[in-house]
Image 1 (tube, rainbow, N blue to C red):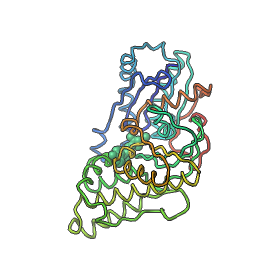
Image 2 (spheres, rainbow, N blue to C red):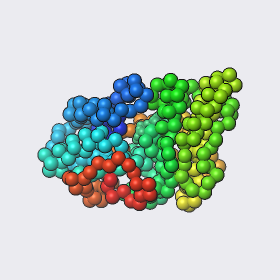
Image 3 (cartoon, helix red, strand yellow):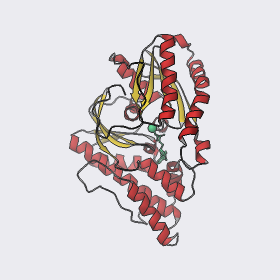
Image 4 (cartoon, protein in one colour):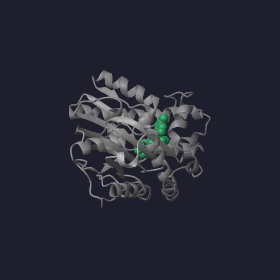
Length: 337
Ligand code: KG4
Ligand code: ZN
């Protein structure tokens, strides 16, 4: 089965072609440079940029795979959650293609796709718990099969990536903040400043990161950079996020009685998170798996792959499917979107 995947959920325009689960070609056109001028993604600019590049990317990804338009059998596209203006560019393009080629459409949930991205590189047995931590989402899911997920925990305020981005903005560092903070934190002492681990003591699997960002700002306003250096503060801040995500996710896996955790989303690219989760997981006899970095970040291959499982099960979406901006707080099942 030849599947075209499209993701325009935020600020990356991404196309991919899969033959079943095998990637034939993939492309990501990043808008980071333009948004970094504003310290975050500007929705109106993002959707216009998607519109400018979709045609060219589509032709290029086809050329790279050595295929022609008529070879595509299914189109899988992110319908949400994300920025609606951005999502509509990819979704409209996908619908147009399905109409003109007479092929089926699969609408994919972006967070579900992050949780499934590991299957691009290896097999994982169901059930497993997935942590998806990015700039827009921080959720813990339970997946019992490839077609459905259950949200068992979510951030009550900011996403983990958003906390990194806001901390970077506060220090005048470029967007996206996660990679920059990770780099600076390498030179810092992780236990130099004691930041809170929000909600870790609570039994619920929900999380909170906005208080942590406020704690960082208050600390710097009160102490300046005399007591601790910027790398020390950032290393301590990163450690608080890493520990919160690790404790919450591993506890969720234990409570669900599953022995495997899969991590996805931009924050999953963080080396300290990878190190701590694998190590603490091992101590609890829980295997923690991370996709390679390019599949942690937004990409259309994970969308095509999720679409593949739906298409194989004959689960297609109507051509009037709508884009949606937010994930329902407690969702059961993916229903293709
Ligand atoms: O999944 P993604 O590419 O886009 C969204 O769906 O949001 O994730 C981007 C987010 C940004 O908030 C960025 O700061 C964060 O992931 N991020 C990181 C790292 N690389 C990206 N956070 C921590 N450490 C990193 N190495
Ligand atoms: Zn994402």
